[in-house]
Amino acid sequence: MKHTALALVTAFACLLGRPAEARSLLDYVGQCVPFARQASGIQIYGDAWTWWDQAKDRYQRGEQPRVGSVIAFARQSRLPLGHVAVVSRTVESRVLMLTHANWSRFDGERGHAEQDVTVFDVSKNNDWSEVKVWFRDSNGLGGTIYKVHGFIYAPGRPHENLTAKSPDYVGALIDAYVPGAGIDANTRTAR
Image 1 (cartoon, rainbow, N blue to C red):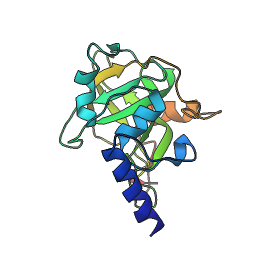
Image 2: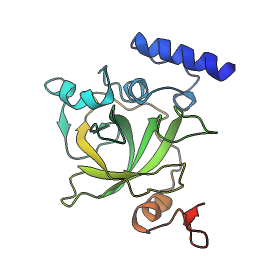
Image 3: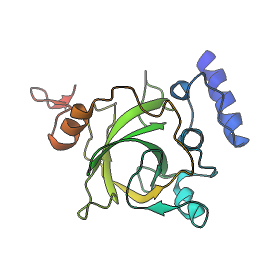
Image 4: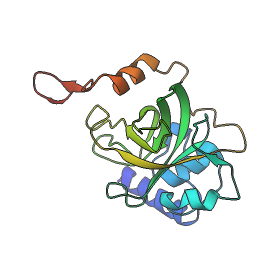
């Protein structure tokens, strides 16, 4: 019952264009758009796939990630409404960490915030146009390649809880560069 009430409050708040109040950024439960707006300070509304075009002439946009910028995923079969997430750390030229909501499941439920999630640039030109994203459900990056429009640069400072005090840089590099790092070699299933 508690989760149902929270989901209703979150849905109603999204209709009003405001995220549901959470005790902290990471307590958030809801859609990616209100979360990205709260975490980045970028004031764009509407489905995630519309953010890239809406940002034109309002915010700077580009191909290079910056901490606090919003990565705008294109609409595609696996993401019919697109997706937006906030860059929390740069690990190296092809590996980032994101903080976002409504990606993996927690206890079978979507909508929760995740902090410092590994993202790997798999584009041929190292321009972040194609990425793989850590998916908690499979404990790995998986095989899905997601199309990305680019990065929308936030005008101010990122949210104070955007990244952890001690993120796992080594783990992020292993996730990106070691094929099957999240797969149990004996069973060929996710650990």
